[in-house]
Length: 599
Image (spheres, rainbow, N blue to C red):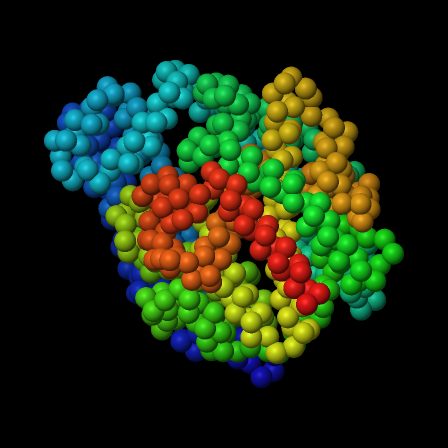
């Protein structure tokens, strides 16, 4: 893109390398016109409050008006935010994003009456409305999900009290965020070039992959030692968050906090147990073996947590231009069939992707869009093999969204968080398999294996360990015990020792790592990374093995959106997470890949 290796201004990047946001709005003026009209629609939604029990016609009218309003509101919000991400120095898009955010808050307030009002209506009312109004038939599952929550909804006065308590419940996470993002400072370390360098969370991953072990050690002690100094305060914050979970689960008459977290997506506790139990049972034969392999390859007499990210091979130096990356992706995804490939190419030609870095552009990568837009992908493509994996990952998200929105009505177009990483990880698995089969050197092959090992370690075993920690801490607190810093650190030490085995030294600083994990303030969320990874590996394995109708089942999954409970959607596509089988299949695949290192 730039011969001088300088980051270009956005105006200097050719249009074919930038996403086509004009497909949403041709100008800021058109956005403003839509904003004004949508603002009026939001206000009119309030008129339905108190009227949903007047009959099927009123109920249908509200749903239609609500969908049309939310459709345009999502377009406004998506466009403004993506436009601001093109160049964060520009103030106009950020102003629009602020306006869209404010309107979204007003919309949420305007329709807040809907769920309580529906749940307060007589039990048979919705069924009668569906019978009397044919257009309401498509919303049957939507209402069934909503009415399922009836047993956990309290009388109006108590609901008001719980709503008011919501701000207090947010205090632990807010305090954690302010402490760790704003107030906490890490020491400087000496980097690979011998220069004094400021240590930050953002730089930790780069330092942890350094070939200089002293850099890795100093970064580890700097980050984890700092968290250890604040473990008393953070333990109080985390304890407050757990107490909030217990308070709400008891108030709403759930069995416990875990039951409350799993209820919304109708996930049985067996699935959570499969996550934890599979990781525990396979740690010794597989994860311990991986640690031993790393220790041997790195030539270390002792092995520590700060050695886990150290690469076992050098990164491939070959630069891959974007067109070549697309060709690689298409070849790797050939097993998904002609329909998928044609739509993938359509995404490239219709400029779903904002490809290259420019000055002021948002860092990282993501897939976004809404029911009223095409999918969009933000990249900062730089020609590395990592960037190729990022391309297929984000396009996996976008293809999932594309098929869901194309195949489902608006009410079911969005898939759940439980399903969100399946398509993206399936694409990565297919790319990895293609590259392994076509690798021209043993060194590149081992780099790819190392990449896969890191995926399994961080996405399966580590997240499963997090899930076990959450289950243990909530059970301990629900039994009336206090979550002290010593208890939390002792538990963390035990879980790490079980996960990584006797070849890894558990440093005192690592015992405070629980204090560093922001996901713990959204309880029982991390297990979904494991289920997503497991489902993706099951799909990829079936597709690559040419199992009967594997591709057909997978495409059906992509097109299902949120039209049923997530586990039912997966089960119909051939992956049953209520069984231990897909988890064990993932571990068997991991074992085969471990064996491949010595081949």
